Length: 268
Length: 168
Image (tube, rainbow over all chains, first blue to last red; front, side, top):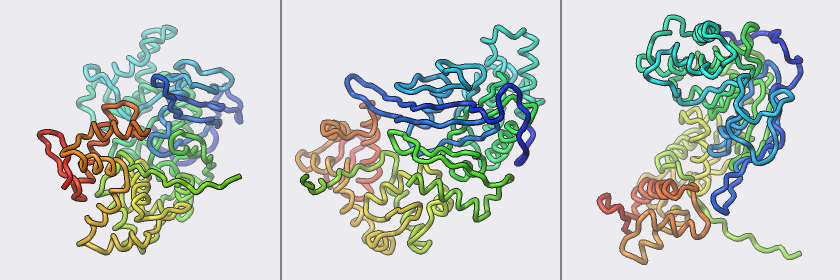
């Protein structure tokens, strides 16, 4: 993955420059247990756009991860809709890749086989096309030379790279990431953050939007073009910040600190 | 229209906060001059918001800090708590007995010889208080809270063999 902290708008094809990639419209979710109704998300609305890195945060239990799964088509909302461009999301789609906090790798398969596993259901691709995609995704995720290594032989950061490669192999337009770096050491997490941002701004990458859930306010201000802040349960949008700090962002600067403060003010 | 006086709010300890976290939060805030920005406090403690926000809620509930627009202040009680080494445990005990699940645990343990976390969780659930919708997880959270706070504060003892708490 090419690390980069700056760059202009890449010329991705197929989507109008200012068009919304994902539209979350009045989404609500209730958990039901017998007669009891527990609201988890209430009237959540926002849009993401091409070339945007969107961070979602909020107190524990506010429904951030659930919201991400709704966007990925894994959970159906009780009310409201989510659209990928103009199409309703009702089930997982190849244009939307997901990377979870836990690596969820098959330990008896190599890195290459784990990435191929993600492509198993793609009947539109020939075996050779799948192979080429898997190798390219591993390369893009910084795993060239580690194709035949098993997960047990990889560090936490490398395992997460396999998870990223598996998502990239689908050539998604939108990458959804649920606290992907929270279990990694600081240095590895920092490197991967920059590499994911590099993928967003790389013109040859299919990724147009990254939406990441995070509890780490420094990470949010380091990466976000837009930060969506949710309230405590039930999760409602209490703030949408357009973080216009120039990149690369200096974490030691007063401006950076002031942006972190804005997030905390919304959270408190 | 009648303006009714506000009813006292039932205070409920966040399920994942431990006494050591609140004590650290108060100590660090005091060490930074009794007023600190939330980002600075998070940085000093090395916590992300999944740890900081519930710990702040707990410290506010105990009356030790006040947070306002991203700033954290030690209250007079918080200053007193930070300065004392002898009376910390006693002060904590006085505060905790007003907060659930400690209040109910103490009440039940006063009526009977022993109480289990399951009995405390059930009694609280009957009154509409629970930390998790799954009963076994809810009971686990109550058990962890009682072990981590009540034993430290010295108002409940615990017998690990029977899984029962008794009043000290």
